[in-house]
Length: 291
Length: 314
Image 1 (tube, chains in turn blue, purple):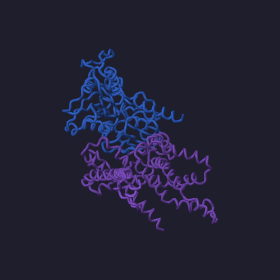
Image 2 (cartoon, rainbow over the protein chains, first blue to last red; image 1 turned 90 degrees about the horizontal axis):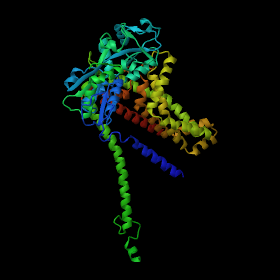
Image 3 (tube, each protein chain N blue to C red; image 1 turned 90 degrees about the vertical axis):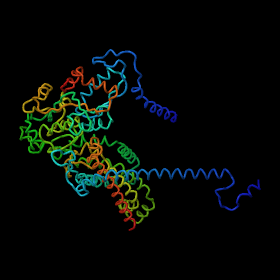
Image 4 (cartoon, one colour; image 1 turned 135 degrees about the vertical axis):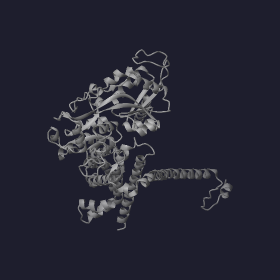
């Protein structure tokens, strides 16, 4: 009896392994999908996988674009690895991903090594503090002084007394690169924690009443555990990022390798993401489309 | 029938080329399995050799370029610096790993040993069963879960308790590491203690020692090599842990202090490997950190073995 039970359970476990099969091997469907909002440039149905790798700030944008693309092309699966801008650029360069995602413009040496960056949206970097903090506005100079350690106490910038805890990102992060170049704090930030994703920074700031950090506007919008301070009186929103009045912003870039042809489905995704049809989706994700 | 038996050598020598086929077949099976075991052992040695050689070959170029003293004793690690010269000093990581492991071992080994004594000798069977299952459960928890619980519960608790600006510090890492190495130490120590012959303890008790005196003066030394193995296992796990630490220690390359945000040797490799471009000095420096970590573990193993052997010769 016990032996039968054991065999049955093992079989069930083994069979459940097969539950993941079948999604990628779908044959081309003859019927046209009626759900399309985006243009369908190819007449034959697309199938296969598109692998995206890189910026954690672009999670929401990539999420909506990928979902819409997969709805329009049911044979394609879009995968997204959130590893950070630096890792995404590296993945595009060595071919381990179809398209790399970067939340900063490509550096000169990266462009010189054959990488091509296509800006698909602009994103504001929100400077976030804990939702319970009394501070609502900071100037760019104050932010720079806080992150370089010149200002160490919240009372110096109008909040309740408490040592400021700076939460930042790892060295390869596009968000960190954008933040540091605009605030002029390159190589000079003294941080309490260097976390490896946008989500981790938001969580850390939400859990610490003394914390200040920076994260993508698209990830921060709608969250009530952290609040974005106004920078020099300017609220961080899509409108202010678009007209440039919000100073701390950076591009969302799709990175591809020059000379290496993308697969059909990856090329189709690229066209879709950079087309006018994707603008509404990008806007709904909290970034500012440039198409 | 008598003739064929007489044809075999009558004395006990078993010549391999014995005329009886069945005996030759069994010899062959024995040989086959001996070779198979030898092969498996050789595979283990081959892996160790391969890893050592690979680490040495990939780790040396960066050390040569940066300079051994600058690399091992430099106090700043900033490989992506653009406004100043990049610096590749890993002393902060080395010291942090040493202090973190030492802290975890100093707190974990006594607690582990005493729990093992309790489980093996003192506890009533029912209590022992419950505690043993709890320890085994603890051993099976993946490190990411420790990191998660540490990040959500431990870090804010440290922040409140010590009135710091941020709770992610060396202390949090030490506490997490201690909890992680406890199960391995307890399991191995308990096995070693149970293997101590009952006669030793009975003799000690018969000579008038109390139970506690017996356990500390007779059982523990008798189980010495097993306990040493437990400590080595614990140290190995503590010095090699990356995932749990990355969530609670803060990851800033500072010189270690109990309440400062620190980065270990393991997290230094883990945080930067994904975006260091191949062939760059940064990537080679990460390989060199791997080499240093590897040498560390070898050194600790050798030291502990010498220490134990040294004790045995007393």
